[in-house]
Image (cartoon, rainbow, N blue to C red; front, side, top):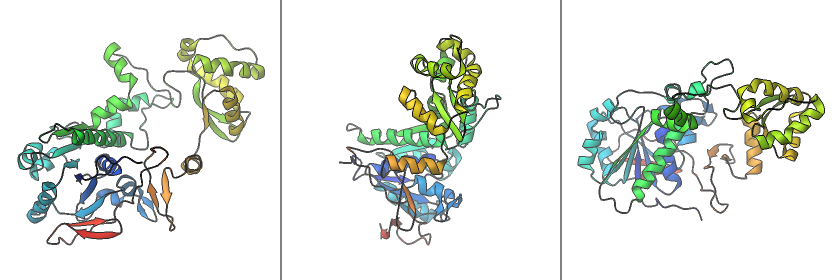
Length: 377
């Protein structure tokens, strides 16, 4: 049975782009009725690239929601938002401070009007800070880009919007916990700052060392920060990642390398990590004469973690073969619906596609568009 502890609760989602949208999506995954309120032109992410079925950005992060369009600068539409909030349990948004204040959506105003409403704000630097940023900026200011540096030392931003997604996941979990609090008698503000999430979640153990020692270990390309040799290695037909830096893994791989390359110098984990390039060269001298499949098969025999470096098409094909129903489920027309990467007793929550562009004709009542139908509320 798929748990749906949020069934019966309504969430109004004012978010645009990714981080706040992920929060609303997660709440929908576990039963909440999530109404996404978009500008008349739609969430700006609808205009971003995708496939023949439309923006991949919008459709990836807005599954399971209903949608309506309101011009919040228009007094009538602003009043219609209040109609939605009157019956809502939570509000999710990522508007900047000045926008929230101008629209009467700042925490003091909302709490005064809707005293039991849980308000979740995903912002750049916190609820009281007017600065803005995007995922890439958060990666830069958090120190992650330095930890993720290329081999030449140039700071490097990661693809996949990790700050946005992690911020959305933290926001979704925290909102659900606030809604689940049995003894809560009034609303509260859930304040998620992307800058803080990036430092805490993306830099991870490095943040603790920075606090305790005031130092850090800069990134070294694809090499693992804590072990060596662990890196991407060239093969005859592509690349494989081999994680052999822990002593137990190195002890299994070393005899195989020596059988082909001759005796290797003795070096413990700290000595190897002090000069990782030297050991990476040793491993690649061996892998470059073998196919990716040969390397991965032998690593599996040795119980040394390894895997082929795949492109997204190959990765999707392999993962869906290994985990049926995972990642993206496609209809007869080929349109995909992104899936939650979790199962419960082998059952995956069933996601519906992100809603189509909502009507923007400003009806007398708020029109909420569901997948496959329209309903007036």
